[in-house]
Image 1: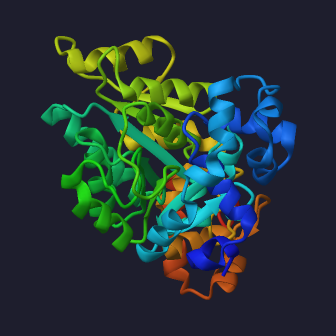
Image 2 (image 1 turned 180 degrees about the vertical axis):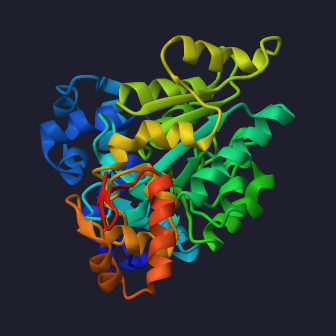
Length: 378
């Protein structure tokens, strides 16, 4: 068990300092990075005099005093005890299992409170976001796309909000897949409250809830745009399903563009305001989405170099749809011509099963026949 998994009493001073700094009002991810660049560690930042803190770009006298007083004003140990009592894990950006994609954005969170599991396979994740006041059409599309992605082995990431977010989480769960919810509030203070059962279902199904806020934090309005960068940061791409011209979903899409992620948009009716944001995204270059295949095809070059949790390298998105036998046969076929007899021997399967599976792989354009008895991977 890592130190950040331990009970509140066993946290080191370094961890406590990191959490205390994160709880200082006004110190966001960018200011935190500036402070660390100047002082080196959270403990050194908290020990600095206000005059020293003011030398850092973006730190004024009021915030400097707040940081310097944090040791006396912020009860970190109480928050860590609450986290421990509710089964929450603390993940620091220095931990080995901190999500790699998220660590690469320009303003990553310094820490995350986690309820549930983050797995290596979550590197293959796609975000789905949209309006809280979604139409029936939007809810159906979000659930349909989330289910298809989950069946393809992709983790669905969203924000547990009303409307599109909730539909995306439910669609992934209905398909038996993984889903991760990013909250703007603390994990002990689920928002909206009617989604407490959905949050429990996500964790029970093996997924996770994440927040960079302390466990009991209320959902303040300014935290939602900040939360959105984590949704896109964890994802290979973001799908927007219904968005007005000014909406949190478009903020997430902008974060995705800035982070170098793919942006997808589902078209809607031209006479509904819920469609305007998505149609603008499409005009601006977002990929129009009608089906899950549109997303998988676009992600192909990214997925190609991303290891799955089982250590296998996915060369093409269509591989994510294969069952166990199809994967077994595919892995036995080389990128150079391979005898079907060799494939049969490597798989240990009956010849008729190998031949029928090869036909399926051919139809999915994952392999091709070189001659009657030779096949190779595309």
